[in-house]
Length: 257
Image (cartoon, rainbow, N blue to C red):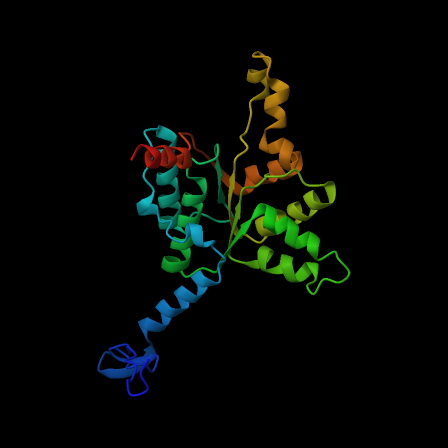
């Protein structure tokens, strides 16, 4: 910028940049916090939510369901969850299940984003693998962070989004930590949003097809353990999703262009 130029800084026309606006209550002027401050707080909460840049544009209105009933139902469930929050949610969250690329993370992030901006909640996004690695890094004697410094924000934030649950099968010790996180959130009536590429499998039906073992080992229950899957049944509504892999579809479109 040229030294002689002055930078124009936009100020709120309602409060003039003071952060407080004078409004009449009856005939009496009262100073109250300006709406621009609330909007600023919302943007700060969004910035602190750790949503990866690649998902920064995820919104409910930009999710276009494929021609499947489950995708349309999943979007409707997500929209209704935001609309009714916190009435009727209690400690119930959402668990989006489906193969890779069907839009699970898009919907989950859209819900988190809407709750932060429209409902004023505090929320955090965590990739499942990143969370495990962060927790495990605290076990190093040279770590600058304690385990509680990692776990406390995860257990105490109003809304937690845990993406790609079960991407790796954790050790028994890590399973205990995960159960501690989710069980504490459940007991404290805190909402948890989750996504997973691993499906729930009806073993009895699969057995007749001779694929019971393969399907069982690919199931979410196998990846996270029976106890944790049981807790998830209690604390989350399962939202199944199907369809083609969006990423492959777009890649084919790029090559055909």
